[in-house]
Length: 481
Image (tube, rainbow, N blue to C red; front, side):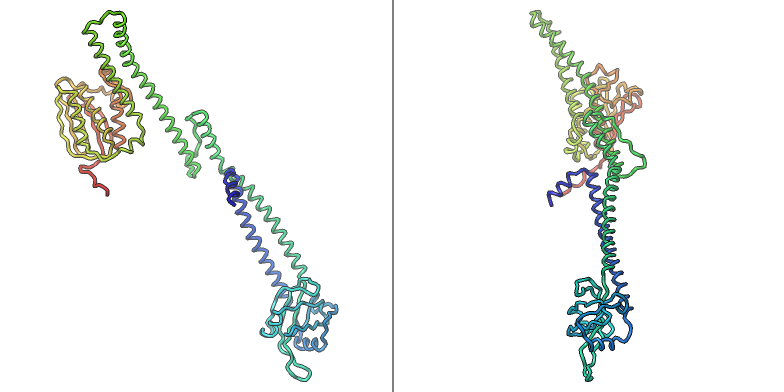
């Protein structure tokens, strides 16, 4: 049985569906056919029983007495008292007295004897039986009560046993069984064919989906789409929409990945070229024995150090952008935003000691990744330090989940504001300053992952205001035991 089940599971889905439909139809047709056959059999037997009852006429007690007085164990041919009929009188001891017009002798059973002796008078008892030649007959036994002897004493209980052949009835039932069998076979075959056709029609969208998946696996073409009707809401339509959405997401991810690689290559080229040039100058000086003046050598080494620092920063930003969503989700926890901002301020004050940084921070707790959130805030403060004039002021405020960082620098032109959060985008006026162009992009993604939003606007009186809104609460949530 297990082998059959394993073999069945290896078949194509359409074949399994066709077989299941055929099996279900076969079961239903078999049940209906058997029920129909038994109903027809009952009706035919009921008709035969009614005919047997209608054929009984005349004073049966006197007829039984006459048959007993002229008892014979052999039957004489005749027309029967209503056609081709068996009729005989039977005592409760099993003695058979065949009537003059009986077609033959019926085999008497113990049930007939019991019925003759114990049953109510005129209560007919029906059964199937056979005659002395083994032919099938329908038997009716009617008790006639006790008889009297010639001397007037009480005689045995007797009953009249009448039967008719079942040849025609059985032929009708056999013909009906054959017809039902043929109809059932045709029905099962038709159901199997219909099931296969329905399975093919129903699985046609799945075939298209399979072809699309195989095409993507073979060619890596993520631009393929499966057509879906707008009003379709079945499982196949939902699966097709999910596939289209998946390929769109993958195509967008691949495009962003290619763009990231191209932009990273472009950004890496400048510091690497500068490093190569400076190192070649130092090497050539050593090879030719022509020393570089100390001031120029110091400037070259300082440039190499700056370029290395810029490369390290760029690589760190790229690693941050390349981290997967799952890696971030594993480290998300409740974080004190005020403590995070204070830690970021301590780092930034070291980078701009000549600046005045004021802070007004209120308690606020958010769900985020601590290191990523601190890095994002440091990036915002770094931008403020970078564009603030010497001796300038930076105002930092945190109130009910809204963090604002305002500098008093030159500000960002209005036409450049839509691009400030794009990867590797740098304002033309800031390209001479150190940086990779990824800082604000990391800020935007970190804030969005924490469920918040960030934006840059012009400040009244000059400068730029960075606003970060993060959902949370002024108190930490209770710990779950």
